Length: 360
Image (cartoon, rainbow, N blue to C red; front, side, top):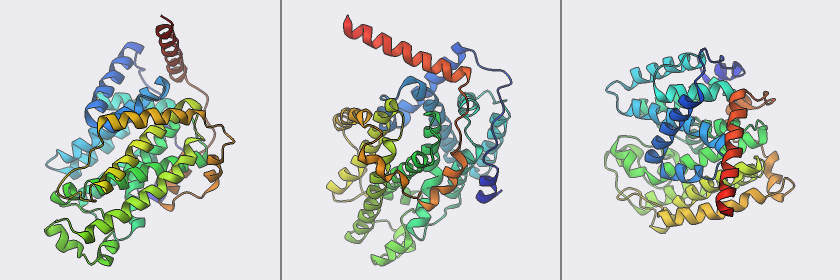
């Protein structure tokens, strides 16, 4: 099924659980997913600390499946077979009968109770399949299409677990995901090349005097390559700026966490630029203390009122590459399930506990 066909059936909802997890089992699963997040993506984990528990819990489930899927493909001797197996695992998840894998159980809980359209996860796997096939990207729009699949999908799913289905908020969330992926590409140029992968727009490389095939055969840093990386970071910054409008459209208690992710990833690009744009011979890392300062800065995002000028960009048309994700995800918000009400109560309990500690 191609992506246009998938978009046509995107409204299909996942089946209800056949055998719901007990609160204790669910808690154990989510804690294990959280440990996986902490060990896999420090930037994402740091930003997630500002999310309310009702969002942080399902976010860890989403992250766990994305991480496990990526690892399953990268570590397989037959990546194509691994993708087929992951599609079969999604079949079971959406039938309400997930397998014994931790990530599958957690994902099934999230998709059933937050109404995550399957088109989003199918698009994610399609992006992984593009990696396996060694797909090249001629234009920046082609790179956008790749980013929409491997990162824009995550932005859409995160927005849904925040119980927001407004098309404007979804568009900005998907674009934030694409911006983050552009930052990742700029940071990992050398690492990807050593794996035989090239995500920079071939058109931009030729305009800078570089032959993509020849460069991939012998990846070295040069002023010409730096100019391409700089263009990519400039495009990421453009999308980060658009995404700021979407932050103000999110629930107030979710804004700081998403703003933190936006600021931390944006800092990766600025640090790379400060290091001369060389992402071939070394990897750019944002120091922990700098990440924490950005997280503190993001706390002010929750204070942005709905009428703030930041929301003026909400009417901007979505990036063409993410439109199918927005169309698949927007619509009326379903009624809250028992699972979602439980998460909200856990959120309330945590807030009361923190307040009691402050008063002690």
